[in-house]
Image (cartoon, rainbow, N blue to C red; front, side):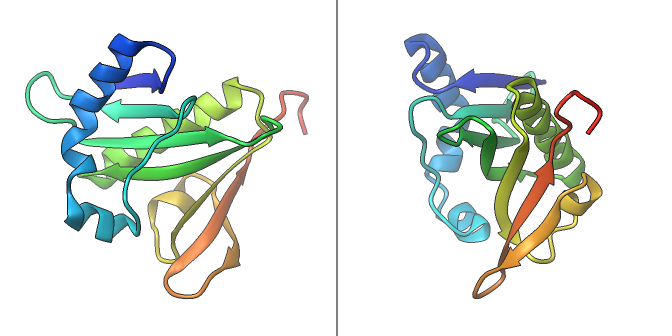
Length: 142
């Protein structure tokens, strides 16, 4: 199951979110793997893969740009590629439903999941990370 949360929208839901993702927040090895510590701000949108029992298996986090026309997918982590693609797909749907024209993320150059979902590298950075973008259908056929 993929559960969706908007940070700061509801105190009980915020507690639920942190209960699901808390072990990721404390995992230094995961922070190294994704290239940064995990943080959040009010209005960030989180999608969390939750089993019937046990710990969450993955998550994405989206932050809307000031204009709302673009979303930054800040994190996309899961314990399998299939689950990660499902989480990214849910993040794309969320951005599209919000009327965004584009979603972008900063991930490793050799990421296999992003190109499979239509993302393209638009710029490279020092080291192993690149900016990936996906243009979203505006709904008018363009």
